[in-house]
Image (cartoon, rainbow, N blue to C red):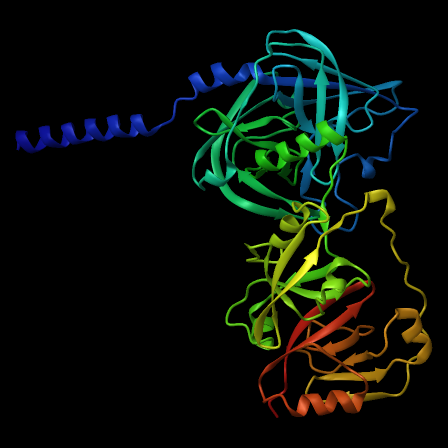
Length: 467
């Protein structure tokens, strides 16, 4: 009896010892890397830029379904004062004074002060800003500074320990720890950053600060949080350091960031759409629109093509393509693998250059004229009518069918006012043409309808009525 009791005690002791050894010790990491983390204070004159509260720098656009929850977390600044002061974080990437932070930390600043861990302060100047990735490169006049060591985010594993160092709520050199919750996260209106998701506590003032792995290497820049209250709720997002360093290199050498562009609008390939196009699995990026005269247009890429690979890199989901294309140097000649008409093929194209935000034009939608007589298409569960000449001219299309009514309550992907442009890759010329195509589709099968709604064009998978 005593022997069994002693064995239990001994087993419990070793279990405690093993558990204690598994818990990480961050002390040495913080001592070595903390000196490279800085506090950033900005001063902004109210007469220069003081937008309404609903339009503060870095907030998602109004109308975005996630705008209530996703926030870049520079601390709010008071209103109605001659000058505004805000705080954020950053870190030194070179001994001669270059450092990285978030663009929204220094947005509109008239003056920037960088405070080091040893209490020295320096005035900083902005070398360049890239709003698409929310990154800014700053420079202070100093030498022999401590700098971070860059890690490889590709080697990062979900579940791995990470720590964040920054100045939440102005408390300098604060350290929080957590694990990597996910990799490659896509956030609303953030097409070019595969975010690292963590549960390390991140709050206002951490913005722009580094995220370290257990080797003491910086692997990300803390940029956004998911919140209903404005504070930490367990979901934080960091920009991978390789993305940030590529931006920093371009800003340092040219003062701007160039990105590739091919001129397509794409959407996710769902399981139903994959079946419609004869794909064995849901993968790739489905082309729903091709800009006339663009690189894709010149290469012969068509609406309904599914892009599977770009320059040898697999496009697993539609979110992959913008990042891969953007990272490709403009004027590069690349090979694109497509899926078209139930077979794989390759085309070559010369990558174009993405224009600056201020030269991207948006086309406004005009009032539509009264449509022509409508017809019920039973197999689709829709009432459709042909577009008249004025509507075609206004929309810039040769043909199309206007959705007058949705008869089948199960069809919730379409609504009145939508324009059906094609089935698969076949442009619809008339109602009779549509019926001829539908006769060739077996009962119960999915068809892919190319639908225009306002300025958006995308494919919708619709199962045909089996009756």
